Image 1 (cartoon, rainbow, N blue to C red):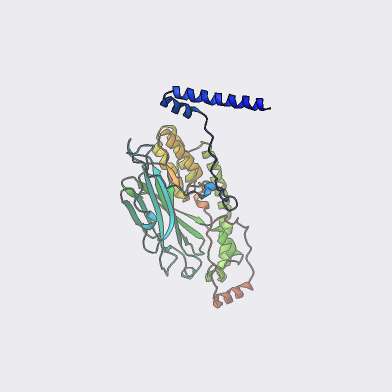
Image 2 (image 1 turned 45 degrees about the vertical axis):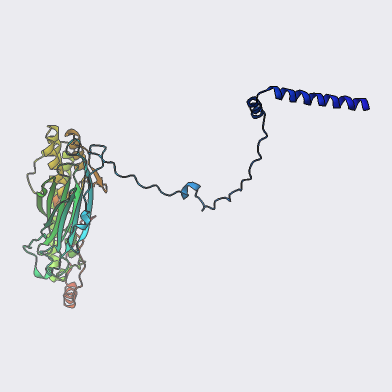
Amino acid sequence: MRRICSRLMLCGLALTACNKAESERLPKNKVAQAAAESPQPEPAPAAVAEEPPLALPAGQTPGDLFLVPPKLPPRLTTGGDGGQPAVPTSDCADAGPSGALLVKHLELTLPAAKPGEAPQVVQACLFQNALERTDRTSHSGKQFHIVAVWPGDVNWAMDVAEPEREPSNLPPERSKAGHDATAWGTLIATRLPETPVLAVISSRFIDGNLGEVLQWRRQARLLHVGKGWLPFEGREFSSVDGEHLRQLCEGKAEYSPADKAAGALQLACDRLSQWQPTHEEQQQAHLTLRNERLLGKGSDAVTAAEEDPQSAWLLAGKRALAKGDWATAAQMALRVDMVCGEPVTEAHALLSEVAKIAALPPIRVQPAQNPVAMCEPLPDKIAPRRKVAEVPKSAGKAGAESAGKPAPTPAAKVPHAERAP
């Protein structure tokens, strides 16, 4: 055992001596390099404290906590299709008369007038003012104001005169209640860059010794780029309120104290029996004529007031467009809008064809328009909604006395109007 321990001690001393001798033979820099190349033990990792989980409302993620980035500034450009449009410095809704009601607001993005220029945003507004009128049979009691605002503080504004019409044979007792005139208006985007907006002011007056005659009027102005609101066209026409005659004949009308007059009932029945057959014949003739024109047949000339000018203008516009005369086609389409007082589906389909053939750039309109079907022929205009009047006791007594008399034979009923202006 002693021999084994002695031998191990001798071997250890020998190895130590060898290592010492080897290190003495190496230069000092080699010794440092050898020490650097020898593997070093990795340091112990530092203790990291765990963060508590985020308390988020239901349905949210950590990304929802980020701040909303600021909007990028408008790109500086000279315009063109990719440039920012030039906008008005003020809103046309703020340019109306004091106390006026904003009826319609349109915003249109017009294409650049020249290459390199920016598109333009144009605003058009229609305002309405109520007027105090004691005579409401000849005065509509409405005044309108139209405004167009362009970039660069260009402002086109004008007052539209109050629609007025003196009745020719409406009795004074019927002017007290139930036979009031009225007016309304709208703005229509035309899709034409040079004349982008059509303003239509409509009015209706009541006439006739029974209040059965309706006098209609349309006035239109067209917004021209660089010129403002210029007169476009107008039209006046009349129709018969068959529903009013029917209610008078049956003794149910209570729109005016004169409705209960003893002679009014028989006169209304006589008038209704004369008017109804003619009206039905005209209505059928109008529909037949309209259907032919919508198929591209027949004449496009308006030869009489009893005809259907809407379909005539539409047919004339299609034929003008087939010849390449897109300016006439556009004017005919706008005539249809003017008479109907609304954007018409068939007319704006024609304007779309005009824009395509004339290579007119598109116009963006806000809010979007919802065209309606072409309105009925002019002599078949719908009856208005009349205000029911409180019949004085004297008139009621007269009505009771007439009730004992033989009742007139009512004529056949006339279909009631579906919609009133």
